[in-house]
Image (cartoon, rainbow, N blue to C red; front, top):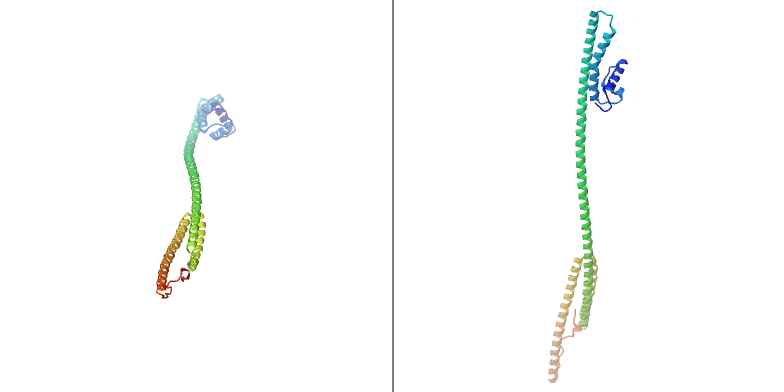
Length: 282
């Protein structure tokens, strides 16, 4: 029995509906009581229908005391047939209500199953969201680590660039020292000195270009240093060539001087055959 619903309450509600000329049904009894589940009302209303025939038969016997027995039997027969018909209708309605209740129960079960499936799907989605969140957190941590590593790499690269700039400055100072030495050695040949000065200017310009390039990329510094080194080697090679040429001229001059001395001794004038290095054409 449902909580708060009794057989007496159902009987009173059904009798009230019957007195108003209405057929007691599960919906009407439930509306009369204001509560009650269909299954409970179906069972209690079936008990009311079963007791209704007995109450009506007893009332009919009590209301017909002066009629002949044959008439009473006929009335009772009609009343019994009416009761049987009413009971059949009640049983049919009860079966229909039970079918409706079973259908409602099945529908409710399907809804419960669907809700359970939805709950399972929701839990799976929640679990997937949790996994996605954990993956996102791991990716964020990895990004932070990579950012820290990149920052350290940038710092190291900046230190490397600074070291390269210092090296370039040292190379430049050494080059300037070497060029100063070359100037002292090439003072005797104006043409060679002029060409050497042009080469120095070009080397200085290349050095400046190399210094600017070293600030953005270390590879450019290596190429500029190579170019500068090649220019320096070329100047040194030219210096060696000039020195060899000067040595050759000195040897020729000594030969000429010895020839002049020999000629003067023989009272023969010998014309110099070698020009000075300063008179050499470029």
